[in-house]
Length: 100
Image (cartoon, rainbow, N blue to C red):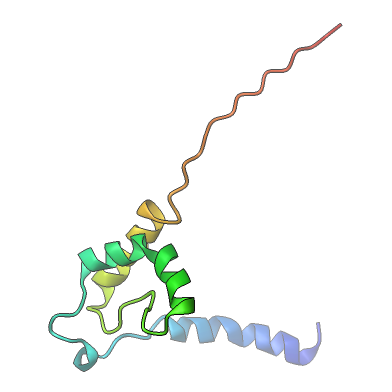
């Protein structure tokens, strides 16, 4: 690797660590901001909201402002367990017949 590329890779963990420290300013949160339950709902309807957000400028996939961590947690649960992340797998059994 060259010098600038190696330096860029060395800086990347620091930048990601600083990005992890970002938080929402309390004054930006509305009193009736969406919480955990609406986060779950928004995560569940994410695929539909995403497609509609491409077509309609007034639709967003994420509620801003929201009440922070609980909304994010609900959004995560909605996507992973109820929405697109819910993977209904099937068990496939393969039997081999050995012929002699």
